[in-house]
Image (cartoon, rainbow, N blue to C red; front, side, top):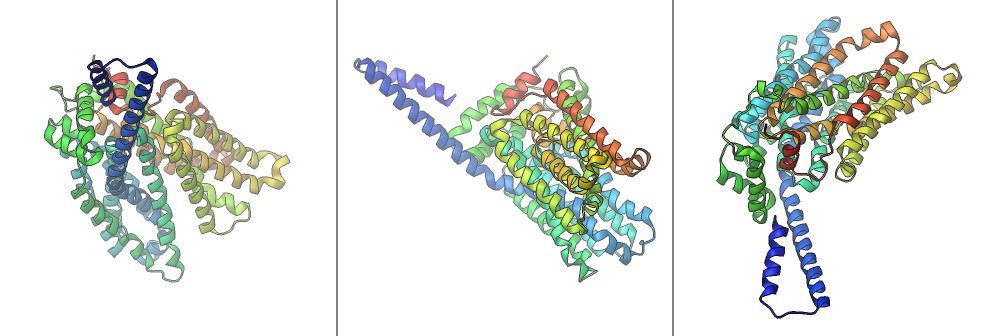
Length: 492
């Protein structure tokens, strides 16, 4: 819009002046184009810088997501002794899995809260279960209190899993939305690594596990405080017909020069229509169901491709290769995850979401084949240990290049504004349900079929995912959310 107005203004101005030579007119046009492009780049650069602090605040929710997922791994043995459940593996299982049950509830309710109260207020509300849950876990004197604390923490990270990518995608400039959106996955990985590092003093101090849980209070409080000073999503404000507040939010996030342009784009997308609040049944309407099914299916593929099973079994794989340290094995897998996510962040707005997804699942399929063969081919027996380690690291690296970060980024992009929060919540609910059942059934399936066949099955799922993505997923790189909405969810 700004470029078109600039060119019209330039031509009108020249029409009132004396005629100039053809060469001078070309030079003037080139000069005008350079000025306009330079002005646009400067505006975009300022916009990017203005958004970064608020993306950073939202990313505290992603850190907490990863930290609460990882903290129990190192602490379980020690808290089981303190709480008297060493011999009770069922109760230990409840301590671990209650977080996933809470996350399922939280992800499902996060969308409704975000639609009702707005994105920033939902973050502030989310800090309550995150803080209280961490305190209960850190001070628990019995397993009942610990389970309640884990449940509340799970509800908190479930809400975070829904609103962190939602908020980041809605406030990010189009030209770097992919890079900023992938920060969500990067900080989840950092949170998991932070939990691993936090567990290092356990060997010398068995009651350190309480401090590990208590540490999570700090980012929870900082998240609430930061969101009190963060601007609301302009898209949500327009949806609520709060136009003056939307303009103010755009001014803070992107600068005053882009207020008119972005407000026109938001209004043109149909967000100012009479019927704004979408119900859960709207997700299954003929207008939205196709795109909602794509979102849910991507998260199902993410989990059914075996990431949690591979990470769970990685310690045994590394021991077989002669790596006896659990910490070293976890650190290597975690480092591969972080490294791959950093690479994905740099490529997201260059190569595109769809390309990274296809590359990722292809790499995961090849890695699974390598892992399966390392367990079964006799010719590979002398090298089975190192090959299994290489296959595991390559799998995690491939996952982190696309299958890990892209779904959480892509979903807020492909969903229409009026269903975005609820559709993201529904897709994440499918993610947590699949996560829970895979964790519940994995060991039984391995016992029945053997790890080699299970890995081969995961590889087949990855191949199916590549075919599905190639035919169903659209590229969103470099396109505004409003433009994507007009293509995928046009009014009927």
